Amino acid sequence: MDTRYGFREAARMEWIKLRSLRSTRWVLAGGMVATVALGVVAGYNTRSVTGDPTSNVLAGALVGQVITGVLGVLAMTSEYSSGLVRVTFAAMPRRGLVLAAKAVVFGAVCLAAGEITVVASFLGGMAALRSSVPHPSLSDPAVLRAVLMTGAYLALTGLAGLGIGAILRHGAAAVGVLVGGLFVLPLITGAASRATGKFMPELIAGNSLAAVKPVAGFTWSPWLELGIVALYPAALLAAGGWLLVHRDA
Image (cartoon, rainbow, N blue to C red; front, side, top):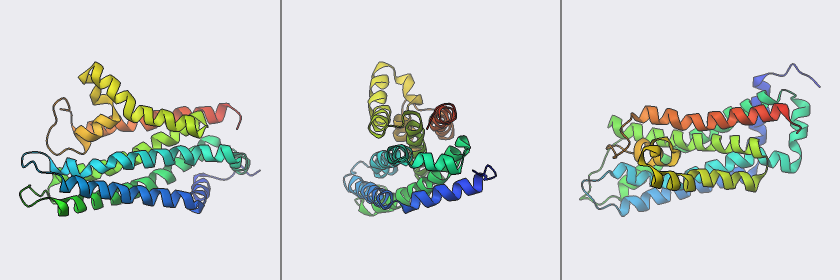
């Protein structure tokens, strides 16, 4: 057991594990295609000349966030179900370092895939818009900001899934918590109080990050809202890292 391994070696190990899984590539590719397809459909169905076409064509991110979140869960829990985690920790005893490397590698992959997907979704959706509907352009800073923030949101959702997986270790349970947190909790809290919507990632994404025009109730800066969203995976990964260090593999 060599304790001299550092972050670079841990990141290289995590990259090899991530790219060697054929299922990850296929699921991620399928999610990207589905997200773009929904963006095109949303663009075609947009008829309002006073609405926000950018937000409409980015609606496909609803699927993208589920895909990246579930992949984040599986990136962690699959190692426990297969027993690979014991080999990983035997080769790299610093468990917190392993999780940090996994988060950086997986987050970078999700960010790249997310940005490519939302840009393609935007361009496809714009091409499908009817001639009577305004056609926003990426040359508009507000539009570009909405597109790029939506891609970043997909990566943050993936990291949240990774953190939940590190905490629970069980794939089905972690996916259930992820989906409940993304969709069920915002509905409950939103119905109870509109003010809490500013703190719900799913509502922030649809009403602030992906929106060019202000949405009622989301008057904070989109950058501040993105920071609020980032707090969730940061807290989950911190909790997951603590548990990795203080309990048996």
